[in-house]
Every structure is written in structure tokens, then in C-alpha cells.
Image 1 (tube, rainbow, N blue to C red):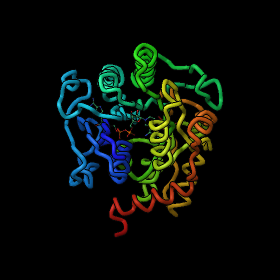
Image 2 (cartoon, protein in one colour; image 1 turned 45 degrees about the horizontal axis):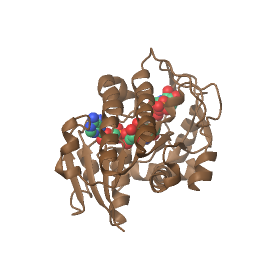
Image 3 (cartoon, rainbow, N blue to C red; image 1 turned 135 degrees about the horizontal axis):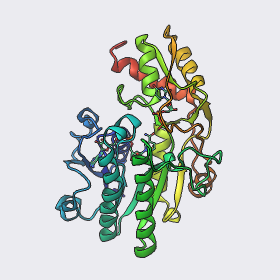
Image 4 (cartoon, rainbow, N blue to C red; image 1 turned 180 degrees about the vertical axis):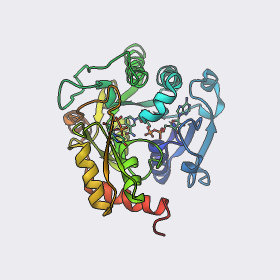
Length: 321
Ligand code: NAD
Ligand code: UDP
């Protein structure tokens, strides 16, 4: 049966992908965005669907709660937030606001309408982890006094709002701690590592490795992440739970640079640049909980995902038709 679903951050990378899937399944989707990091072009293919309704606004606005367009929603995916270090460090106050005040607004809406809600938190909640891989029970190692704190700590406080609404009001909220997700849906200038490396390799520019490239990340293709988020929303047994959503296969950044270079047959050089302050040294999810509760695990390998990403970026960059 079709549902009335609210997506915040619908003009962003994950939000626009999720909206397309939910519309394809026959649902009604209300999308909210203030275009702070999202792009109008991401709404192409959505706006002409008569089951999609878009509203340009800031989800921190309390007026939203009484907006007639968002009444009686059944599901809320709260995705709005800058996600790339480039953007959250350029907009620290907005990042803090949307993940705290914005999250509280969405929880209030969920409470009023007995809606289900997924809050997209992040692997950054673990900071620079001292436990590896990271299970949801690990409490993290976050610096409150550094350039990543506006994102990491705001997400952590967002999680606290979710906890309180679940405990006090039995709000059907679940928290996804998403690990690095990618596809060609990432804007070429987004600043995250895969969009940077693939764009650089295809254009024959230097591939910019920060630090010595021994730091690690675990990369999840977008369709796997979106599948995990939808299962999390559906599962009543996941109410009040935090769940890692990510691919547990770990790569160093230099391995990633070499893989991108190989798959693009690029002549680019790999160059080394200063490591940003507080850049986590390792990151890899334990996904045992998601496997048990959701029956979810990613299915797309990094090589497969990169091949799709490279093909689509070639079209985007007008390198092939
Ligand atoms: P994105 O930057 O592409 O999209 C975020 C969207 O939120 C943008 O369209 C932006 O304009 C919108 N937005 C920001 N503040 C807003 C506000 N106050 N009101 C309305 N709209 C607002 O990011 P993404 O990669 O799609 O990430 C989506 C969510 O998933 C974020 O919450 C992010 O923290 C989380 N996440 C993503 C990843 C990842 O690898 N993509 C990893 C961990 C967590
Ligand atoms: N990185 C890099 N070169 C780039 C962009 C990022 O070496 O051009 C590194 C970055 O320092 C980090 C990793 O790649 O160690 C992942 O960075 P990203 O910004 O994608 O996400 P993060 O996991 O740090 O939030």
C-alpha cells in the first residue's frame, strides 16, 4: 500500500536517490530542502511526478510543524545536513542547527502523527576510533574542539533527541549511522574522496591524497545504503535502535587512489597533501546488528561500484555521450 513519506534533504545525494525509489514503488513523497548543499538538478525526474511535492524551506523552522502540506505523514527520513567535510566546515552553525533543532522538529512531527522516523547519523559519531571495527556499542573518540566537531557532536546530540523521544513518547524512531557512501550522484565538486579521485582521474588531473594515504575507509555503494535505510524504516523491531549502515570491506586511501587510476586507465599522478586536522585514521563498520535485525548486508563491491560511478561521471563530464 502506498505511503505518505517526508524526506528532508531531498535535493542532496542520498535524498534524491531515496525519493526516486520511493516514487517508483508508488508512494507519495514530500521533499524538503533549502539548497544549502543540494542541487536543483537533483530534482530533475522528480518534479514532473505528480506524487512528488517539493517545498523549499529550512527544516529548523518551527512553522513547519503546522504546515498543512506535511500533516499526516507516515514516514519521515530526516537526511537534511551538510555531509561533506568541505561543506560542514564552511557552514558549522547551520550544521549544528539542522542536526539538533531540525531533528527535534522532525521528531515532534513524528510524535504528532505517530509516524515512523529514520534519522541519518554518521560513522563520525565514533570520531577517530580506538575500537576497530566499530560496533554500535562503541562510544567513540570525538574531539569537541576541532573542525569536525560541528558535524560529529551535532549528530551525536541529534541521536540524544531521538533517544529521548523514543523513551518518553515511544516515538517510532531509528538511527542509521551511515558509513562513507558513494556513486556518481555525488556532485563532482562535493569534495568527498571518491568524487574527487574519479573526477581528477578522468580529467587527467593530479589525484590528491591527503596525508600518506594509510588512513582507511569502508565504501558503500548508494543502492546498498538506500536499501538498508528502507529496511530500517520498515522494521518495527528496530524502533529505538542505532544501526550501522555501511560496507565492512576496508581500503586505505592510497589503495583507493590506485584502484581508481587503474579502472579509469588514467595517466594522472598521485600527489600527497597535508592531512586535515582530526581526520580519522581508520573506519570500518561492524554490521552484525543490521544483519540480524534487518537481514541486510551490502552486495556491491568497491570495484563494481567504482565501475558504475566512472561510467556515469564520464557522461556527466561530457567525456562520452
Ligand atoms: P548532501 O549534502 O548531498 O545532502 C544534504 C541535503 O540537505 C542537501 O540537499 C542540503 O541542501 C539539505 N539541507 C541541509 N541543511 C538543510 C536545512 N536546514 N533545511 C533543509 N534542507 C537542508 O548529503 P548526503 O550525502 O545526501 O547526506 C544525507 C544525510 O546522510 C546527511 O544527514 C548526512 O550527514 C548523512 N550521511 C551521509 C553519508 C554519506 O556518505 N553520503 C555518510 C554519513 C552520514
Ligand atoms: N581524502 C583524500 N583526498 C581527497 C579527499 C579526501 O585523501 O581529495 C581523504 C580524507 O582525508 C579522508 C578520506 O579521504 O581520510 C575520506 O574523506 P571524505 O571527505 O570522503 O570523508 P570522511 O570520511 O573524511 O568524512
